Length: 224
Image (cartoon, rainbow, N blue to C red; front, side):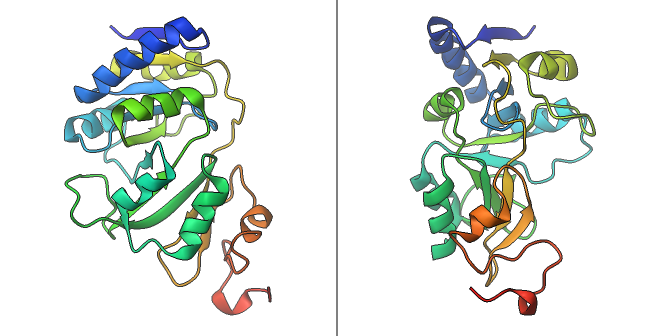
């Protein structure tokens, strides 16, 4: 049976994060609040955890979950050939609602990298998520909802959808963001915006002026 913790209470938060970290270390899944929506999370290096995440969401296969990290510097532990644009975006928007796709470190022993050798990384702007990440290290995450269902913006919505497929629920109150992170691909010669989310193209272009948006070809890029 799943355990529930109201982490808006600081006393209960410490216990909840400790219990959640123990379950993550044992290869189980937990639900955690983030600055966008609620997420289901597991150890990014645990095959058992990744299989559990896939089963909990009702997926036939797990497609490239994001990896949440506790620090900007963790990016270099997961990714290789991190270019100046990727670093500038991380410095400008992390912690925050920006997911950066990079080339995955080829030496890492994990199963969540995409077939093309990339990894999607984000540092969230939420105290509970960051405190859990400090205990666990990188977490593979996906929205705390069944495939095809609306994103969970409260812990209760996540519980209704995932039930006992998750070992621990950390309830941080309603999501203040409610909008998914923006996603950029930094693996090519020019940064591409793959999903416009909480951070719009104008904000991203303040850091990377030649950003490509969906449907835009390289020769259509406006002059800086």
